[in-house]
Image 1 (spheres, rainbow, N blue to C red):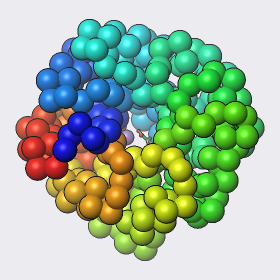
Image 2 (spheres, rainbow, N blue to C red; image 1 turned 90 degrees about the vertical axis):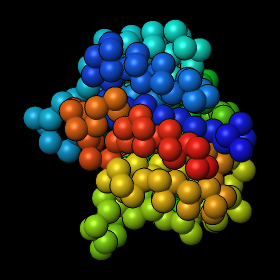
Image 3 (cartoon, rainbow, N blue to C red; image 1 turned 120 degrees about the horizontal axis):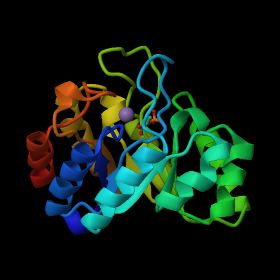
Length: 236
Ligand code: PEP
Ligand code: MN
């Protein structure tokens, strides 16, 4: 089963060489081919860790190259598109930038695959129109990513929209990756939500994994440990 699935995994943020290298080594051992990790982080609180910037990109690239992996990482600022493109194989558009049409157009100058995350309050129509901004620039190399939406339910960080998986698979030609980590916000809920996403028709998963979740500088509550991640992979 795993060979048919696209798995993107890694820490929320790149923190240091050992953290990202050990994660890449572990993930590649399980057959994961795409390493994720943020170097520029969209944090709610401006005092929180914002990412290592270019140093993070270098560490991420080096770790991926050592273990024969591809890199997906977020670009947030149009001034950093060229820089991020020098290190990334896939450019991630975060939930907070999905609605930014001019930014999406600017990204297409790089002709790289784009992982487009759904805005946390975006309708499916708005999500698909955002994909059209990219498509209209001639880039059809788009991965859609459902990462949960805002609802009244606060036991999970967001609400994973299973219905949207069925709708997006029916209405869009693009592969669909589901991110149960940000949707759940708590590691204990990630495996069930990952399996539910695949049952609903997702083409792949984006999962946050950290060598020491309790010490993570970003999104520590939702990160899976290596052990939790291997157990999940075996069960898929
Ligand atoms: C992320 O993938 O680390 C991230 C910040 O996700 P989102 O844009 O979906 O919040
Ligand atoms: Mn995160």
